[in-house]
Image (cartoon, rainbow, N blue to C red):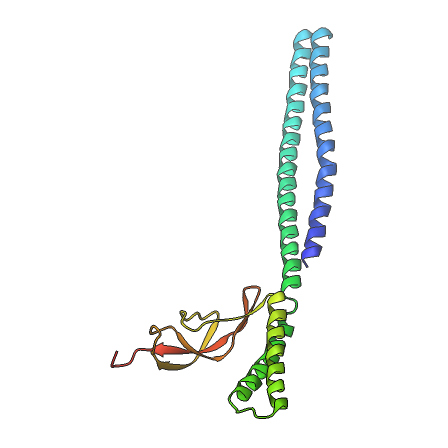
Length: 220
């Protein structure tokens, strides 16, 4: 739709540019004819008084026509400038749409990919909590850690970042409250715990962090 509007604005600009020289030329012809008629009437004629009256009348008519043409030129000039402004606005909007499409075109893919990151992180935590006696299990744990590091590096490269909300103020545009906990070591009203990681793509939230908010207890 933006491209269609841009094409329409460009066509209007072409029509206005073709009309403006024609109107300017007609205005010049009328002005020249008025001057020539006035000069000729002063030099010839059987009755100087009648000729002078006719000349004055013709000049006035030409001046009126020239004034109307000048108004038309001004109107077309105003419309021309407005069409230029509209065309520039459409161009900038189209450019913004294209840039957003390039930047956030992978947004849906990123939402699915962060769920894979959640599973890897959960598996790594479960393995860390167990006593790893076998060499194979230890290697598995190390492999998962390397995969996590590599995945986070890919995220960062493409503008996908994990939120770090603990200790910060609650932000409804980034966080979703799922519980309240006692304020121990953090300021009441701030984020005390994260139940599910949140992610941002180039500064835009694509998944809210599920957080627990610190609440002041009676002892405090």
